[in-house]
Image 1 (cartoon, rainbow, N blue to C red):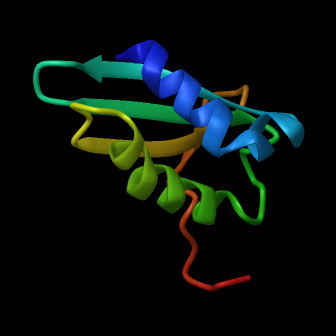
Image 2 (image 1 turned 30 degrees about the horizontal axis):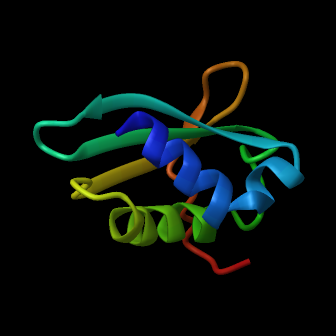
Length: 90
């Protein structure tokens, strides 16, 4: 399942790598269909990371059989974590 998720990310979200970001699967439970993904590198602090997070959560389950729940957050190289969602849309 890990490889299927990685392929789906590369195929459906090429902008992550194209803009210098990365998406790492840090937790995967195949029996329950749960994956936790951390966006790093240039994704942390990116103005559209919130939209990328929502798109990953909504679309990966459609593209990977057996995947039922996806959580996503950003993480800079110093370990600061961020859900990517802001109170303001800009």
